[in-house]
Image (cartoon, rainbow, N blue to C red; front, side, top):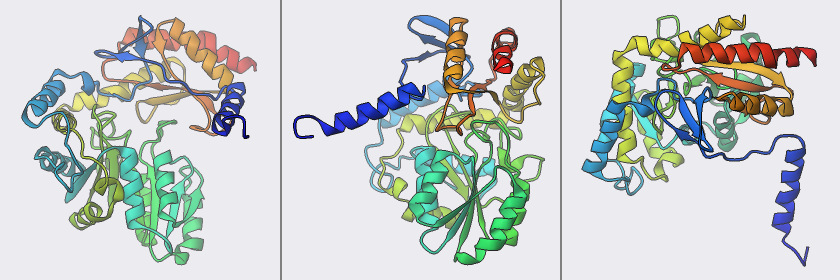
Length: 391
C-alpha cells in the first residue's frame, strides 16, 4: 500500500482478530512483595500464578548474596562467557547444580529458553530424529525446529505411542533424542521419566528433560529425575533458575564430555552476554536453601493438595493445578472476577494451551496462607465451577 504503512496495517489486523477471539495479550504492571503478595493499580492481591514456588526471590539470604555480588563484581558481566563474562561465581554455581542433580558437570545459560534452543541444536541436526511429547514447552519445540532434525510428536505421556514411533522411525536417524518436560507447566503432571529412560536406552536415544518446574519442589527438591527415590538414567537434565530457585538463568546438568561440547558449540551460550553476577550469587544461595530445608521443598505441593481436596480434585503431583474452563472469554472473565476478590490468577489461553482448553493455572508457594487457599477454593467451587457445569 503506497499511501500507508503496510506493517502497521498488517499487525493491526492481526491484533483485531486476536481481540475478537479473546486471545490478545497485554502486559500489566505488577509489583511483587514478600510471600505471595502482589499489587496492581494500587490494589493488594494474593498471587496464585507465580512460579516462585519457594518464595526464594524474596528471601533475605538470597537478596543479601545478590547485593554482595554486585559490590564485588558489578551490576553486569560485560561480555559473553567466552570473552570476559565468565566471572568466578559461575564455577561454584555449576558445581553446586551438578551435585544436586548427581552429574559430572553443569553448564549455566542466560535463560531456560536459551538453554533449550542451544542444547538441542548443538547435539542433533540434519539426518537425526527427535521424539517430543506433544505438550512439551515451547522452547523444547523451537529447539527441535532449529536443529533441522526430523521431529515426531507422541501423545502426551503415552509410552505405547512413543514406543511405536521409536520402532518405526528410530532407524531413520543417525542419532535420536527424546524431549519432554519433567513437570508439565500448564497441567502440573509429571512425565514417566523412569519408563522413558528405559525406552531411550533400548533404542539408543538421548533423553532430555526440561525440569523447570521440578527443581526445588519435586523429590525433595532434586527434581523429576529423582521421583521414586532412585535417579533415572537421564543424560540431559535441563532446568531453570527462575522458578523455585527464585532468580534467573538456565542450566544443563550432564556428563563432563557433554558439557565441554556444549560450551564449545551451543550458540545461545557463545553469543550471549553472561548472567549478571547478582543472578548467579542469588542462585547459589537458593541452592543452599533447597539442599538444606527439605520441609520447605515439600510445602508447595502440600499447599496444592489442600486446594484440590477442597474442590474434590485429584491430588496434584506438583505445585501447579489447572482449573479448565475451556473457553477463552470465560477464562478471562473468571480471572477478572478473582482479581476483584483479591486474588491474582492469570487466565491461560491458546496458543499456550491447545484450543478448547483455556484455564486458570493456579500455582502454590511455600508461604501461601491456608486461609487464602480455602477462600480461593470456595470462590471457585461456588461461583466458577457451577457456571462451567451449566454451559
